Length: 162
Image (cartoon, rainbow, N blue to C red; front, top):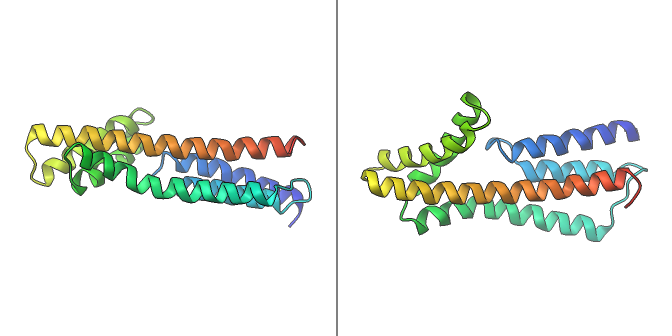
């Protein structure tokens, strides 16, 4: 592949990765990391092995945290897996039908509805919904931060400062 195609692929993957931070169906940080690797394959960009290893470690850590943090938030606030699933589905529905604020409202409402469907009373569902929502937001912020860092590295490298 030519450098131009690899650069275009790298930029596309990074932007797709950034979108994946908000769309639960897309693995944001892995896509952004794949974009870094595509750029690294060009003759124009050469990331150090240390940078690539650190990026890989960050990507793996944030992917693990993204699955653990909402569950921890939900459990800490007294919720169940119904709230975690409701949060994820609600955020997707909110983003699809009421972008961009629907993402936030949908995750909270989805968590509460999930808890109610799981047999919880209103107060317990609300409390667990708050925990699930906070955990979900924390995971999203982590993913956005890692993808932002990858994009910063790429932009700096493409401008010749690497």
